[in-house]
Length: 174
Image 1 (cartoon, rainbow, N blue to C red):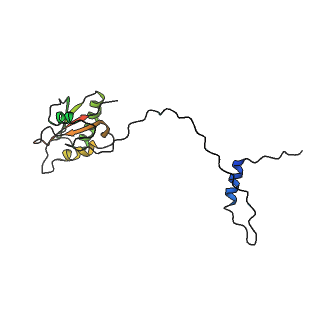
Image 2 (image 1 turned 30 degrees about the horizontal axis):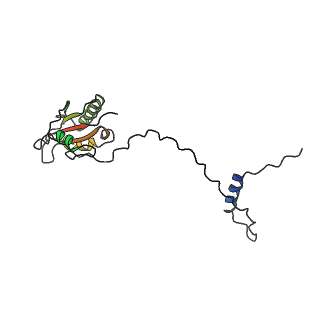
Image 3 (image 1 turned 45 degrees about the vertical axis):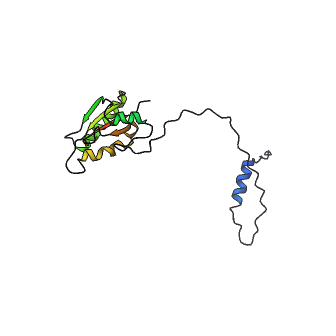
């Protein structure tokens, strides 16, 4: 029985030509003429699809206690910073180890955000020394962690003379 000759597709020819250009002939032999590389087909233009809803971009700016964040108007910032915005919940971290304080803060902020609470207060205490206690020093770092940063819009001390307490303005849940 005679076999039918198989047709070689253009894709196979392109692939063979690309491979053949990488081969070095044996000593004393010449490289045979290579078939010209066929032109690549033009990409197919697809009809424009409506854009799918996108997730919000991750928050890249660091949260600093006392600095007005972008996206918050001056009037709201001044009400929040001066203490005229009522705090709905308070978390007192006095007497806790840093690890327990972190876990309590994490649970507190997630619960407050889920309950649509807008303004909360976290009492860290002043601590000993000029830099303050461990919890007071660590709180800004904790607020900038990926698990907590998307929840918090702004942070400020309720009064300039009271660095042992931080008020947090939470983002509105979507």
